[in-house]
Length: 451
Image (cartoon, rainbow, N blue to C red; front, top):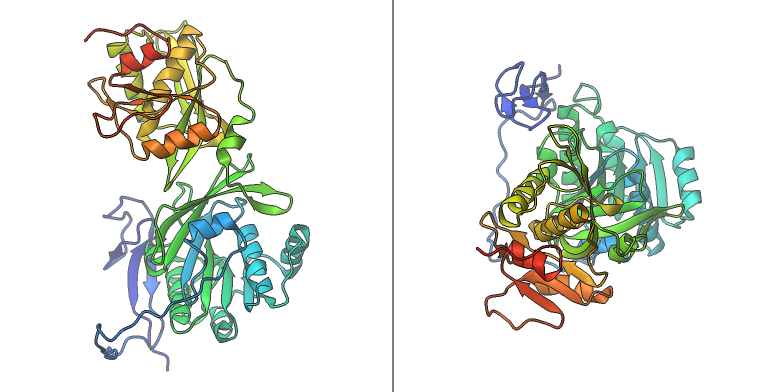
């Protein structure tokens, strides 16, 4: 007679545990998000004592990483996939998760490793058609169409890498419940992670994201894996960014730039050039700046459209920018630069569908608004960056030299940046300013306001 599974209740939104079912989660406030979490039968029992060894006696054996075949993905991975590790790749439907995973699997198989691609959602014909379209092949790349956990676990000892597409479609019949439920996702991910840890087979798990952009499933899913990556990008654009959110074998906040093409996801090592190739130089309201993106610096173009508003309440719309920061910048312009904006509609965006909340964009946002309001173009060779304080001062930002070098590499020669306070001498073309009004005056948008 089978033992009855123990029941626990877990929130599908935040992963919090509850002793009983509730209509609303007391941790995150989500309604109707509590689901029963059943442990697998036969796992109750007494806890077995794990073998105890001396920490001093443990030695970290060097592991040769497996290259994904993409320099940008390898950069996000901090060098490649570590044998015996479990990595989680998430993203919206159609963003390129399966394309990236299939291309990586083919590249690793072509390098001589044995790879298994497990599809629980698509048929063999669909995956084969994608591989043919991308021109992929690999003598040691195998494929299986299954959604049963036991079949996947049985294959781990025969392969160096197992790709699971996707974890929401995998299920264990012994556990009960539908595939994709909190209990199934949690149980299957934990079993796959244990299988990877018990040997040298790496596991790449694909996962969907929820409407708010977070990874679907319980939070434990992110905690138990070794590395978490999320693919960002506007599906109407070909630009993609893969971000490292967690990595036990490398740097966190590493990013890789990719572009979607008929041949799959290709490396885009210089997104700044792609960002500026369609720029209309000399147009009022256009400002180029250098934004910090994870551990990298990239060029972005901030555009502002400022038009008269016959209504009492002006419109404010900001695409790809923090609406809170933009609202603060507008207040600073009115107070410290005497720029009246209360009768003007302001529409702002970062060209190319890029999103950034870097504080170093404050000065460029301010300059774009004033340039658009006064119809005064900023010099084509001029770039700006810096954080604005609430007293009108310009504050230093991280990676200032990296930003300047990236701007100089793309042909800019004049840089309006925060004063360094004697930390280092200014570089060629560097214009150090201390206040918002001084910065606007240096590029000919306004007269400096005496404080």
